[in-house]
Every structure is written in structure tokens, then in C-alpha cells.
Image (tube, rainbow, N blue to C red; front, side, top):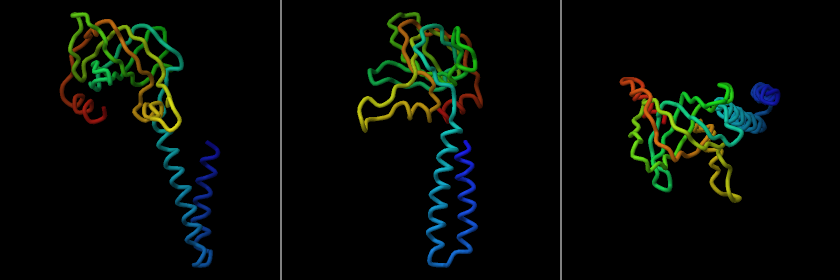
Length: 176
């Protein structure tokens, strides 16, 4: 963080110095200031997305509100949960969002809808990084998507509370 404050002071200083420099040199000072300003904006975006990420493999109860529904590459249904609660994990270490693939063949599973509170028993782990140099960096993608853990379950998904209408559904579709 002190480095970012130093960069911010450098941007301000270069902006002030550019006015005093000769007209032939001042565009270079402004260009460097704009590059440093871009660095500050990128750092602000990365810091604003900060959320807890699971640091270990977890197996246990997972509870949360459905905010997104999609399918995994293996065509298994997948739910993204927010307002997550994990057994034996303190709230300060609990991820903000969790994505769980549903591999249950049991007929007792429900059809989730956005806004519904659900629970299941799942295997979760932190998002993995790229598997080869230059490959897709899922860990970075998950960071900016706010995913703190990904995993799967082989037991049925159980509904706890029905979805609440109105603004919540708009939120689920707009920010999922």
C-alpha cells in the first residue's frame, strides 16, 4: 500500500512538473503520469475485488443463496451461491461466493431457482491456477468473479427457503 501512495504522489508531481517543463518535453511527463495512473486504477480494481478465498480443501455442509445457474463443461448443473455458510469455518474465512457442480443422480434433489436458499454436502477447494504456461488462468478469473471456492457434490441439493421476488431476482441476473 505505501508503494501505491508513492505512485499517486509521483502522478501528482509529474502533473505539476509537466506545466513547468518546456513544451517539447512535457508530453513525456504527462505520458508517464498517465501510465502510472493506469497502474493505480488497476491496483484499485484488484483491491476492490478482495474477498476471502478458501485456503484448503473442504468437505462438509455448504449453505447459501443461489445467484447464478449454469452448466459445467461435463454438462452437470452448476450453482453459484452467495451468503455462504460453511460448517467449522469462521465467517472471516468463509468465501463470499462459492460455485458447486451438482453430480447427484439421486431423485431427491430440487431444481434450484435464483434467490432460493439451498444446502448440500460438498467438496470445495480454492480455485486452481493455469495448468500450462500461457493457459487460461482460472484463479485470476475466479478472483474477479468473486469466487472464493469451487467444487462439487454427489448428494442431493436441498431447499431451505423459497426465493424472494422483486429486486433480489434482478440482482441475481444482473450481477451473476
